Amino acid sequence: MYTPSIIAVLALAIGNVYADHQCLCEEDAYGIADNYGLLFSNYTNEFAAKVVTTDYHVQTDSVSWLSNNGTNCPYTLGKWTYTNVTELQVAQSTQPNITWINTHVFWNCERVFVRWVSPLENQQVQGISIILPEKNPRNDSAVPWLIKTVFAEFNTGSWVANFHIPIGTSPCAAKKDD
Ligand SMILES: *[C@@H]1O[C@H](CO)[C@@H](O)[C@H](O)[C@H]1NC(C)=O
Ligand SMILES: *[C@@H]1O[C@H](CO)[C@@H](O)[C@H](O)[C@H]1NC(C)=O
Ligand SMILES: *[C@@H]1O[C@H](CO)[C@@H](O)[C@H](O)[C@H]1NC(C)=O
Ligand SMILES: *[C@@H]1O[C@H](CO)[C@@H](O)[C@H](O)[C@H]1NC(C)=O
Ligand SMILES: *[C@@H]1O[C@H](CO)[C@@H](O)[C@H](O)[C@H]1NC(C)=O
Image 1 (spheres, rainbow, N blue to C red):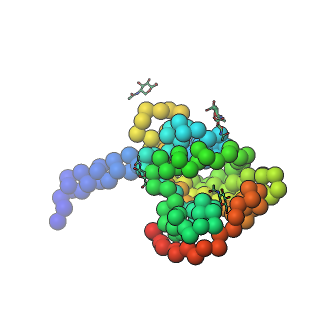
Image 2 (cartoon, rainbow, N blue to C red):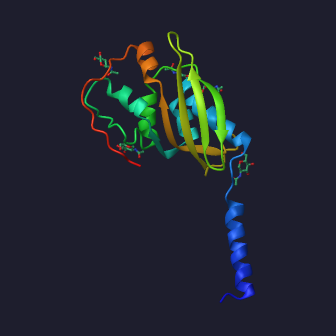
Image 3 (cartoon, helix red, strand yellow):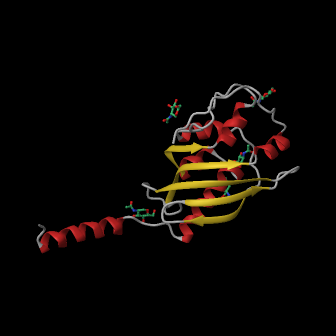
């Protein structure tokens, strides 16, 4: 049986856990969504290193499928597309900047949900991204949250039409990470 003083100590401990657990506010959510968009519209390796975690993870079959470029899936569908910031930098630094508009930003305590569109020349590309951020351990008031994990999909059909990418025909085994 707990004595009242132990209950008081437990209550204090639980209270502190919640006090330390900072929820995203509107400003946080929009800041995270803006930085995410800038990874596609205004990309530099330095910027990526500033706004994503070193263990940045992305799962997007849209990107994996496009990156496979008609070959037999070096980027396995259903698996993590990138598993650290270096993989993002290697891939994204070869890409052109595109116009990027976050049309809707939703959030809860710990996640940001973005609907976005890129009005490319021939056909728009729209997509949805789920972003899991992490408090920035570095003292950078301009970037209070880092982007840690992203789940995203978009209209690869329009992307193919705009960038004239071959449509893959090789078989690709799908595996699930999570
Ligand atoms: C785009 O990148 C340049 C060069 O890194 C930077 O000076 C500029 O502030 C960035 N634009 C936005 C909107 O962040
Ligand atoms: C994308 O934008 C950034 C910031 O303006 C610029 O430094 C970079 O060279 C651009 N990338 C390409 C491929 O043009
Ligand atoms: C994609 O494949 C085509 C041939 O099907 C090739 O011409 C092109 O260079 C490849 N693109 C990349 C980025 O590897
Ligand atoms: C990133 O991941 C790649 C592939 O798994 C690995 O070769 C590389 O060493 C990693 N880089 C860092 C900085 O963790
Ligand atoms: C964080 O940075 C600000 C502004 O650069 C500085 O005033 C402050 O002392 C720094 N705080 C810590 C804990 O380093």
